[in-house]
Length: 493
Ligand SMILES: [Zn+2]
Image (cartoon, rainbow, N blue to C red):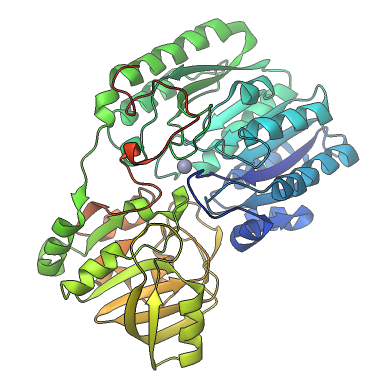
């Protein structure tokens, strides 16, 4: 028998408050939603936070109480009902099991109808229910850290990579700090320091400056008594008071002051280097002109066009048509696009049947992402749209596009799905009978995550600036709540 009972739960959502699509319980069910004893077999061995928790739990021989594992594709505000239903699973588990510790996988940028600081609310309620036992959480690098989150957690552990290829490691780090706490080797305390910065997504990539060296400095400052220092870029599309860049340390109480000084120095350095977060993009016109002439054999692989603003992984509608329309107008062929979400077009393709031609008004139905595109396509494949990630990011995680059709439209294979899902893993193509490395041109609705698995197989990447709710020009958005001044919305902060 283990000495320790550890309750585990996941309630994750990155909320784009500019989205018109509410996030209800169905959105969690469409993406990833598991309960109780179904959780360990689903996540054990996967590169996910719960996978990391379980790795340590198995080593430490903890009695694990799995409650809920819920992660919806980023989108609009989470309904009050969805949050209370998911949180009740955790709170009921606490009441029934009286755990010695709680490990949560959170995002850190959840906004619900009732709680603009959804993650702070979750941690506060869990703290109320558990009383004195340690509560720790893994968080996304795009978390907006609130004082409430810091007040009600004994540890907050961010991913150190974007693309997020170390989600499992963040879970493992959290669980190891928990093990040290339960064994009496750590008296944990959380400190936070902020910078008046709110970069859009592309410059937060961790392979480039300034994030590369900021993260290296954070890692170099970690030690036995300072188990984790995380750099959080914030999430610019959640218009909330807590939005912004921060550095969080999880530390032993004995070295809390030194850790705070380290975090403050990193936050200050990030702000001093704010102009390094400025970033260049490719226009749709230039991208399509290059695609028209692209010689994949000579260039060592396909030209990858990242339709970065229409990324559902940041809450966009994933039904934008601007890039596709421009490629079709230019007569670009031997291309594949993942994905456009349009359940009605999928229904029409199913009705037409594989091998037949169908006429649809494709995409452009939800946000201001381009108009519905009248197209005729040959139905190449119909499937349930499910696959398991095989690339470095969230490897092993089950993904669900809903009922899916592949339409061949004038030499472009377009994956048309029913659920919004970021196609960062090549299985998004392979599961649909498309070999991505053999295309001349690839189009992906993804801002940064595609790089982890696709960069090695393509000849070049272009970050294409088309409309969408993850547009990198933040001056296009009507902010009401973020704390001003804030760079780059304001030059001087
Ligand atoms: Zn993220």
